[in-house]
Image 1 (cartoon, rainbow, N blue to C red):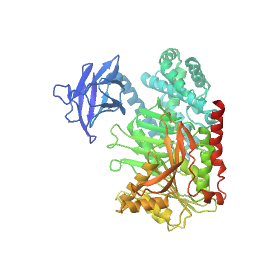
Image 2 (cartoon, one colour):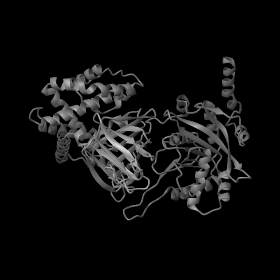
Image 3 (cartoon, rainbow, N blue to C red):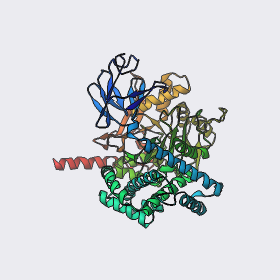
Image 4 (cartoon, one colour):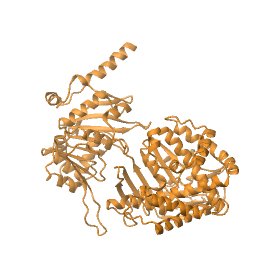
Length: 622
């Protein structure tokens, strides 16, 4: 038996269907087991089957279905995991399989949550947490350890055996995953991480090392993905043997340390995300819902075996992030952008917008900001392209960095901003302050949302207008998304050359079209007048892209050269372009080239040297 939870196009739950057979047919026809009345649904659209204890969706109609964003067309099948989103036309469907999670397991999770909340409440009664540095409060940790020992004195009587087993299983799984992460990240990172290992004594540490050895974890850099697959394959069998042989002392230690860590992170940190925030190899953390957490590493997604026990705990972590910034998130304002103290970007969405519960996305920033040399070593661009961009910034060219989400726009903007001279006054304007400029004369402005009365909001556009009254030499806007594009163009056109910004677009031509659209959001002007503004203001467009392999690189560096007299569209010429995942000089010299040379910002021979060397190498091989 399983259930299908069905939502309509407005994210309103339509109904919950109980299925007691091994397959169910969905479609528009009344002969189907589940009827989805919509002209965009085929008469017989899809089958959901149970095969070997797993769910499979098979498309039988002409119209496609989608499983976790992946298209399934006629006669194709795709496995479906619980919590995967199934899209059929405007309907969203989730599978709920009670048999895959027993009532006993549910009671264990509930019992463990109750135990944590009870200990949390007792801790608040014993220790005043206001005005203290929680992370260094040894008294708080001592009191918590005392409370846990009193509540879980031994494995046989202090807590239900199911709770002990659950805590032990989760602790072991998380510790082995993190051990692989620490080894992959390197010893320096391992010393900085205050996760499980900081609370493991020799006895528990020996258990972890024994598991790692039996599983066959390599510990080599770049081997984390294969290590995680080994854990998935071998852990269950090894754990059964371990659980039957483990002493009460070891079992008790694990459950006590598990509860201590969970409550410490609940009080002071970010729950199961706490140690992930310290890992230098993690670039993004994505909490789909309380039971499903992914990270991005080296451009690829990995699912982690850790969870938030309740939606309320996940919501409390979100509140802890946004409240110090003066932001709010509740049912009336269910979406918020914020940042962590280190500048990492945070987006949170809660019900009713997030159908499956609170959703959290954290874009991590490197503890040490990346440099242009780093990008060159990653293969994101070449040394000659880097030298050209450096000359453009120092030579006061107006630069727009274009790209998709996660393509590295902000990282590149931060690096380019570093080339601005220390004698210039720089104003940065962002939704969430992320740029990490090292110059001394930097004024950082950040937007503010409306208060509970709907007043007091300050937008990017408000801040750009105000920046013009602050005597800036350079204006750096983190991202143009709307009418502020007009003010940015006017600033570039009125004595603030050398300004920089980013926007979302797929290529340089699309970036120009998007600029036009954003200006039209602010004012009703003839398109020709807007294009004149763009050609006068923008000198260079840098296109950043994320390739299918996960690699991020610059694919185009283009000059805005004017307006086509026939079509009236804005023209660009590529100075550098990507070929076979390598950036090459096109041979085109920008119109402002002589100025950069005269001002000693650029050696023109440097543009040709690398490609000439490549051609010579090709001729030699031939």
